[in-house]
Image (cartoon, rainbow, N blue to C red; front, side, top):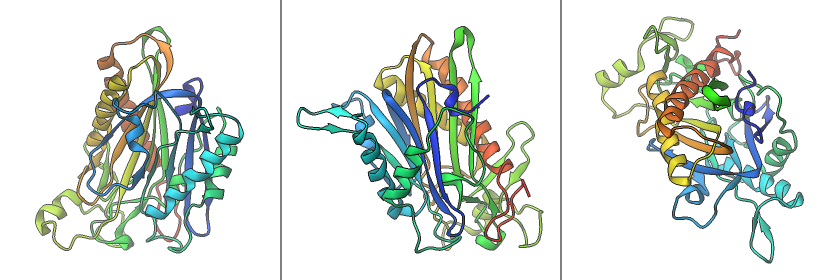
Length: 316
């Protein structure tokens, strides 16, 4: 299993700054992919999301960019557009080819160096590095500066990163997910209900405080948080834009199962769905698989994350 690149036509590339602890991840679908999006967090930072609306003229997109750096990281998408334009890939306008590249960011300015963010050059480098081999996971790309469990501040948080997972259905149909997990809350194993990574009671402890319980006890006032979990689901089944939007909605169930609390006003949680194939599958079956793939990608994002910037990770 390679992760998101198990879907033919999808390539993934990372660019990481391990000194500043930020980076970006580029998902290329150069032959075009029908796309949909579902946004549920209250603190999103995005551009070109409307191109995935069923009412938008663009039939397909050509890449997705996930970046750190808060709103500054949106600049990385310009480098991806430049990379694709040079290859003649994009929406044909008659006068020029315009690559369609949605971008979403997460907030990682509280770790590493706040004045260094993903740039156009970093986005171009990530696009140039994209490949169809196994997806690199952990503290890479958009997950370089990702953390979870910030109910008591960064001193009590844990390191997170990028995770990816594939679920296979019958007839060769596959649904894969990639998640950049930078949640305010805890990551929970849905099978046991136990916290895997999250807010620690003390800076040197591995005893978890329970972010949801802390939120209920304190109320929303004064709770620190600038966070986001970004998920991308891809399938080799054929979907319309309406069906892709529905797949993105169902993929959000994976976040619900594994992050507590999730979809808060402190998070910019969203899910993008890509259809890059022609196989037939029932949309609801794809949705069940998407929820599972996203849930497993979230778990892998914390389980493969190493200690960085003084924030402990489960991978050492």
